[in-house]
Length: 262
Length: 187
Image (cartoon, rainbow over all chains, first blue to last red; front, side, top):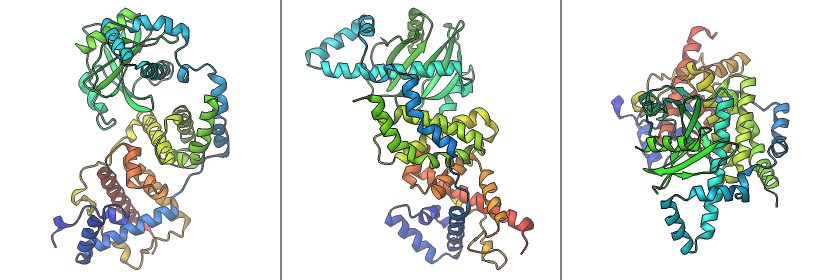
C-alpha cells in the first residue's frame, strides 16, 4: 500500500473520538496495513505510559488555602464594587444626558414607546458591567508591567499578531498623524470573553481600545460611565463592539473615536 | 440575597474542586512551581470574578481555559523564546512520519512499563521539552483526560486542530523517546 493512502487520523481511533463511520474506515484500513497497526499500537503504548507515569502535579496546600480565601478577600477589598449593582443615582443623573446623542435619543424614544424600559435598564446594567471591566483592565494595564503583549507602532505587525490568538480579527489603525500613535496590542478579558486590546498614546496619556465581536448593530458613539476619573466611550461597527477608556479629557477621547472610525 | 455570597458559593462549587487540575496544567506549561502558583492565583481571581457567568456543562474545562490563557499570556511575556510552535498543518503524512515500531524488539519493552524512576523522569523531561502548543494538548488529553471537544474549547481551536496537534505531539514524543533510548539505554 502506498504511503500517501494511510489515514491521517489514527489518533482519533486511539482516543475513541470520531464518528462510528470514521472509526470504521480507520479499522478497515488497519485490517490491511501492518504499518498503521504498528503505529496505532505504539501510540497506544505511549498514551498508556504517559497516563501511568507522567507527573500529575498537585496544588501545594498553602496555595490551595490561599485560593479558598479568595471570596473573603475579594469581598473585603472591593465592598462597593459597582459591577453588580445598577447605576447609582448620582451616576445616572450625570450619565444619562451625555448618553443621549441625538441619534441615541431617537433610539430611546423607540425603545420606551415599545414598552422596552425593562430592556433598557438591563442594557444599562450590562453596559456598566462592561465599563467596570474595561476601567479595571485599563488600570491594571497601567500599573502592572503588562501594557502590551506585542509592542509595535506598526498596524501591520499588531493586526497579524492577534491572528490565531483570537477567533476574530480586530481592525487596527495607525492614528499617528491624528495625534494618537499606536503602541501595541494585548489579549485581555472583558465581560467574560477574550478580547483584543489596542494601546494608543495621546501626549502622555494611554488609551486602551477594547474590541470584540458583537451582533452587527452599528450605532452612534455613546458616552459610557466615568469611573474613578476614567472616561469611557462605546461604539459598534462592522460586527465589532469597541470600548475606549482613558484619563484624557472627554473631547479628546471623542476625537480619538471619530478618527478611528474614519 | 447577597451577590458576594452567591458568587462565593459558585466559586466553591464550580472552581475550587478543580484546583489540582488548574495547578497541573499551569505547572506543565510554566515548568516550575513558583510560576505555576502565580499564574493559577491570577486565574483563580479571574474565575472568581466571572464565575457567575458560567453556564456550560464542564466547569473544570472552563477553569482550565482561564488557566491556559493566563499561562500563555505569562509565557509570551516571560518566556518568548519558548513560544515556538509544534505546527498545526493538516496532519498530512506527518502523523505517520518516521515512527518505527522499535518497541517490538525485545530490548525495549513494548508496554513501556517504565519501572525505573529514571525512565519516568525522562518521560517528564521529554514532555517538558515539547513546544507549549503540543504540550498543552498532551497534558489535557492524557493527564486531564478531556475530550477533543473540551480541549477544542479550552485552546480556542477547531477539533480537527486538536487532533492533528495531538498526533504531532505524540509523534514528537515517540521520536524523542526512541532517540533517547538509542542513545544509551542499557538493554
